[in-house]
Length: 318
Image 1 (tube, one colour):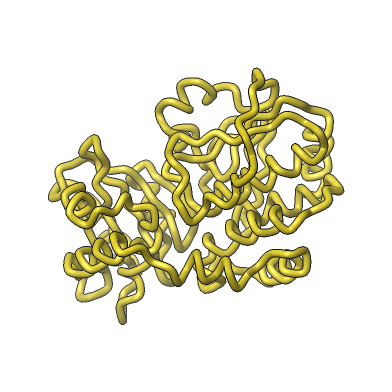
Image 2 (tube, rainbow, N blue to C red):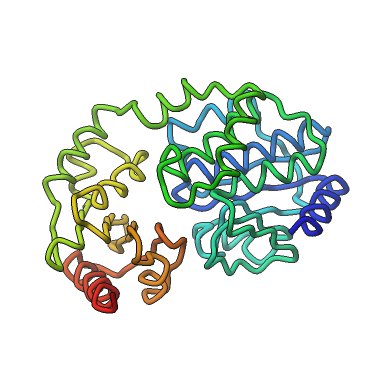
């Protein structure tokens, strides 16, 4: 890994006109890693920009503050926290999916095809990998870069509560705080602040909780009708994804979120000894041991039945 890290740092120092891609429906990790890298490259007087299929959620817009659009023809393309090409989103995949030069990731099930793949599946987040890369590049890590990385690291670990946290994660967080990350503000804004529309959606979601498999599996469904009624755009949907697993005795918690095309995005969270990645792999998805996802066809009853079948199979093998 050290050799690959050094080679990747060398490549980035040599390249210019660099476009950085995130996955669609962006979270703190893909955005934090992408904007930290972008700001680092800009500090080297390179042209760099970040492209995302979807609008950046309000909580993460600080990452792009002060960065104007940069006009250039991409010569080198980087994907951050994108486990597979289809996760780029339809329009971004169509334009750049086959042109990615470097993939920076941390997913065990990642299968993104790129000329160089920097994938450390022992890292808590892609942002943690980016942090190691920037240090290898000898970047002057400013407070805003440290805050981008801290946001990615903290959101992908559930504010350092999930099983993917390692001692290296805590050491990275401490170093980022020393470098100027305002962790108190970030923790408050990322984990403790809710919009009124999200609070309304959260109430509806909790009212939809179903339990199966003698209480070992809990499921929440969020439909387009619920999003419309609450007025929420689902910016904070990762918070809802974490709710089912929090119920007592639950080993598998899942959310089904209806997309505008009628399909459902399934987010699966598990407690040991159940693997979320193994469950989602059966449905052409992937992720980590404790957190994974996939896309299922509608309607809701069909998506629910498919998910329930695979969860039952996983629980029956215990």
